[in-house]
Image: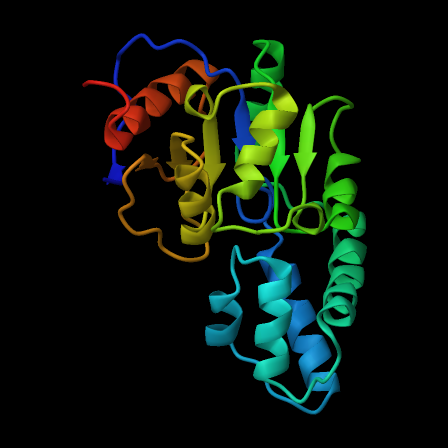
Length: 238
């Protein structure tokens, strides 16, 4: 089960790859999304609230668009709603990328250690590109976005696609996620997962362990946590 665990002093091999969620894990863009939701709903004469916004954290954008239409006067189709949100969020990210503590440092250390990374996000390519452009070239060896998969998180397809793109086995990787939706997606794909809850709590889910921050985390620390997640998943003995 998902447990809050300290990094154990155990030797563990580095993962074949690290699969990163974006919103809430790599970057703190959730306030940008919530602001954009308020703007489009209120411009249509409706009201938006934090409870609605929190229900959309980590969700596929098509799911979010349907929810917005069902809970507001907006009558646009999903594609129009998503584009109206994205243009606002991309503009904010272009002005300032709000990195999560320790994320860029860990990403750089993994690259220096020869561990490939993939970005697995339910945001669309336009937003992922704005974030990637602010990183050193080659930071991500594969990028999976919500507009490029048939089934979004919590379905395992995004993580399966990332593993195929990198040519690695899911069980040999580690996923980094901040939301229940994302953790369920990664674990369902067979990827040992490190949960770093941020905007909303993450419940106990077999195959994941939980930490408070990426700040100060090294590739070796990450490998040990991944080993604990495999034990939780039942694919490795303690």
